[in-house]
Amino acid sequence: MGFFLVALAAAAAAIAVWLDFRFQRFGPSDLGRALIHAGVALAVGWVAVPAAIASIVAAGGGALVAMFAVALPALIYMFLTMLWVVKHAQGLLLRR
Image 1 (cartoon, rainbow, N blue to C red):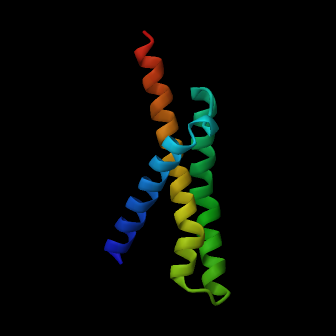
Image 2: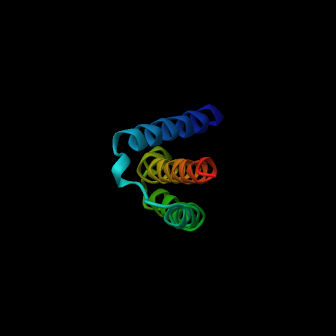
């Protein structure tokens, strides 16, 4: 199970990097908005994802279905917001 979780996180990070390069114009325009996205991603990861996974598994869906239907998109969003925050913070540091 440990290898699967590492592979899932690596796949989510790779997809997030691809999304950031492919759709650059859809990212937030400043650091404040990127931080708001980061806060939303953390809240979703702490509250909504465990509840959604538990409800899918309780309804008879498999754990694998829950991982790909809920956890993977949440991880992609978390990695994507991390990229946005780092890019905007780096841009602010380079302007000085």
